[in-house]
Length: 409
Image 1: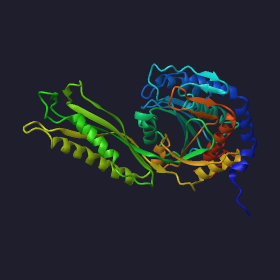
Image 2 (image 1 turned 60 degrees about the horizontal axis):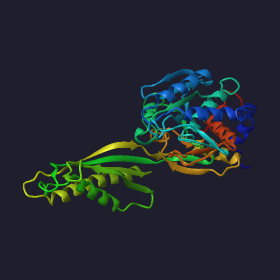
Image 3 (image 1 turned 60 degrees about the vertical axis):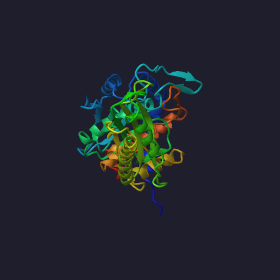
Image 4 (image 1 turned 180 degrees about the vertical axis):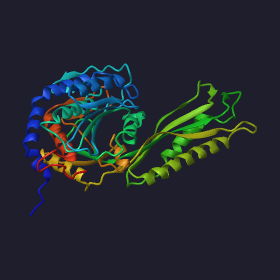
């Protein structure tokens, strides 16, 4: 007899059917909330105003123990029927846009256009909508659900909020689901690890004519960039290494005292990351030696340093794990073809800590992320919200009835 996925029974159950209807009826309000939160500036490292708005909404919908933790994450709990480890639902507060970026959202046909409207205005609005329909009475879970608006997910934030959360509050989480951007097909279960480095060269510097012959720190930085660009990389697992920034010096007619470059390294393999971290150190030493080998006799040598400025852990939740399988079945149930994916999200952290975790979109369609022209189209957005709801309930289980404590995490 063929296996019947528990998602079918869950989807058809009376509490979930009511909750799905509520999400559909509140579709316009959810989009309005998405616009409002997107118009509150929240550059990485300066998320407090947006966090305060989310905290107020958490309290308004009746979450318990709403608080801001030591990293500035905003946390609220919906109690479950059992005193067991919670399921964590998170959405990041921060955007890549610096303070002062115009954040007004405008309409263009069926699209909303504005920086951060999808990433992660949509994720935050979806999290609030789910916290509202999982109300603890009509829809009550077996395990508690912690809703968390995290800080520092983007760029130099280095997953700061998620690291603090899963190192302190959510050490024993049953499962974690990150709501990140739009869409209803992707299931990110492989965490793309990354390490970021700043390589710095320092020397005596001097006048470009009278001091010529002292080692040039910018020449060394350029040599290091060229050496890194020539490194062979494996086809599998996919590994990328790029120099994102390079600079130094104070004037065109001065030999720079300092030259520097910043390097982004990514792979799903920890062993590969370790290997190329060693290659980065070796390239810095070789560039320094080469430039020092050309210096005039008696001039001070360059010194090089390599500083790790970011580290996002990698790993994966196995595709056969019940959480991933349940997400796949739910995606098919709404008529979408599931796309198992690799990405760098808040889910990296729980995955690296051995907690089953995925990241999913929060419905609708979007594009041009990380640009001022970012857009979101809410066509069938409620379907993506219903998918997210089912996955959350699948992880936390129903409080009573035949679907209590589904074995997906």
